[in-house]
Amino acid sequence: MKIRRFRIIPLATEIADSARRKISAGAADHALVTVDSTGSSPCRHCLRWAQPGERVILFPYAAIPSDRPYSETGPIFVHANKCQRYSAINEYPADFRGGRVFRAYGSNYNIIDAQIVNGSEPEVVIERLLQNPETAFVDVRSVSHGCFTFRVQRA
Ligand SMILES: [Zn+2]
Image 1 (cartoon, rainbow, N blue to C red):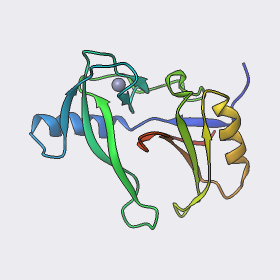
Image 2: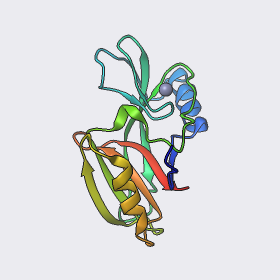
Image 3: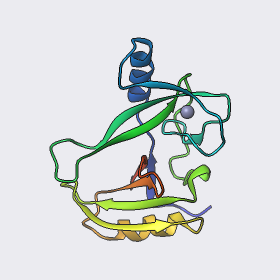
């Protein structure tokens, strides 16, 4: 197995659990959705596509903090029921090899580079972006919808 120089950072369990509490409390900016098609609702906690019939919570998440020029808050899904946080952090998640854009950010949260990958080798793109010493992390997003999927940092 090739040693990867990156590690995958799935959504923190505390954020997923917070969304599950808020949906129970009736938060207006949280919505409970029953998935009707494969490939529509990626869970940011287990890093799998939710399957038809599964319930997910849709809520806004600030991937880039609100006090920055590149601030970005957008909708993400997590499974409504508890799921296991993605743990193969040295392996690129198999469900998201296509339809992603990779954005490299500096330590000040400014975007410094970006590249689209469609089904080829996301690992190669990530390692190229991380070769730039200015890159602090890479955010992986949906090309079509723009939504944050997960973060990548150096191993
Ligand atoms: Zn999940």
